[in-house]
Amino acid sequence: MCSGGFAKCLGISLMPLAIVCVLCNILLFFPGGKYVESGHITQQVWYFGGILGSGVLMIFPALVFLGLKNNDCCGCCGNESCGQRFAMLSSILFAAVGVVGAGYSVIVSSVAINHGPQCLVRVNETYKQWSYPFSNGDYLSNKTAWSKICLEPAGVVSWHLSLFSVLLVMGLIQMALCAVQVVNGLLGCLCGDCCGGSDGA
View 1 (cartoon, helix red, strand yellow):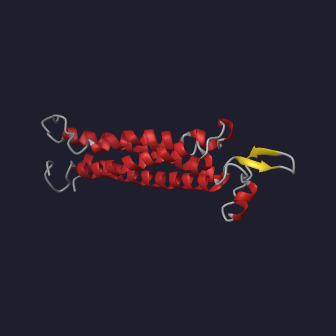
View 2 (cartoon, one colour):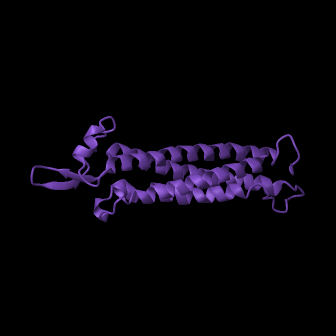
View 3 (cartoon, one colour):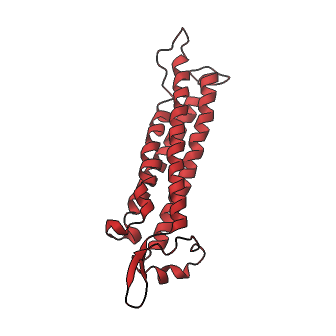
């Protein structure tokens, strides 16, 4: 497969991943699937790791990769493949943007998983307050304590953990795909669209 065609496959793969990340970030604004006041939403949700990092910043590289297969401006200096080579070189920059965006999402998701969700906890028999009861990160192996400590919203811990885990995994996959395109772009820039074959293949 030529470098332009391979880049198009990467772009096709990145688009649904970006959409999934945006949806996950939106769902995190409704902890436990319920509406809560903005002040009761987990802080890391407001960093928009899935919407900006793995979403918007990933759309641009994906669109560039999708257009690489047939992108050969009119050539230059008598070399018809010059436009294609330049396009592959520019794709490396967009791939770097994708790595940065996905990396941001991975960092935010990792911190959020370690920090745990914000929820309503019982301080004493008469007083409850919203806080981060799992901020020391030791809650992952103690599922029985989730519902006992977090009174509201119901199921918020599993909701928080599931969605941020999806964002974490999707972000790692996006970083890997963009890193692959960096290598693919270098090969396309140095060898032309099809190494060892005709440029139009």
